[in-house]
Amino acid sequence: MKPTDFAYHLTSFLSRYMPGTMGLSPNTIMSYRDTFHLLLEFCCEQKKIAAEKMTLGDLNKKLVEEYLDWIEKKRNCKASTRNVRLAAIHAFCRYLQIEFPDYIYPAQQILAIPVKKAKKATVEYMTLDAMKYLLETPDSKTKEGRRDLVLLSLLYDSGARVQELADLRVSDVRVAKPATVKLTGKGRKSRIVPLMKPMATLLEQYLIENGWTDPCARDYPLFQNRSKSKLTREGISYIVKKYADEAIQKAPELFPDKLSPHCYRHSKAVHLLQSGVNLIYIRDFLGHVDIQTTEIYARIDGEMKRKALEKSTNNVVSDKLPEWQSNAGLMNWLKGLGK
Image (cartoon, rainbow, N blue to C red; front, side):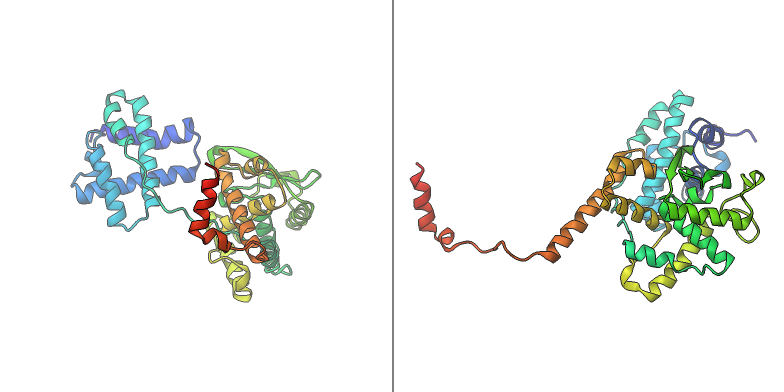
């Protein structure tokens, strides 16, 4: 069977353009692939268009709008998920405008579909006391416990994303002064993050214990599972949840309602800001492209200060008007003096 124009361009978009030209990560490509998997499922079930017969002529504004509506109503997805799916389709349409100019008008119609206003997720973070308590939870008497202690400590101290931590190799860590870790984030962009002395000492002990100080171990995954393969995102999330559940059970008053791996990153950013670190430096530390992304932590810090002021207020300022201000006749007479 001869492939359709939709099949040809979608395959080229996912397998060549995104990883090669755009340099996007496998996780991003997988997310986009899921979007089109669902789109084909929608077309097959709701529109009776078989995947092998789908053409670019079928991909129009009306179809995309119906697909987004199906995602929300039939699959019970949130507006944020809908926006992620729309972003993937928008990226495909921008690609088509360049690679297949004949499709430029339908592509622009789809690009005109706006994202839906979604409720912003609450940024969960931990206090310094909560973080210290959590990092005391792993059992340092066992090898697995020591690995988990190093993992959780580095997740916080470096402000790394989960995937950045999972992708770390032994060669990415420098324990000699100045101690650093090389993190590779979104868009395959790398950044060098300085590490504090206690973290460098922990890492050095960890490398020595595992016999990874030899140059031949440079390409080994820094965090491995029992089969000596690198820990996945899911594996790291499991470890985080394991110790979070244990800590929350013992001291629930210290922790937020949700404690995800990303909470470590948020906590580090808030603690840096509270220590007086410039927002520009925090942006570079976290690997944000836009300073507006980092400004969310300034708003959090401002809210914390406001609450602290409310708790410490001594009620010097009265909220009652003096009697003369409530006297309408007197006020009118005073106003008349200025005329």
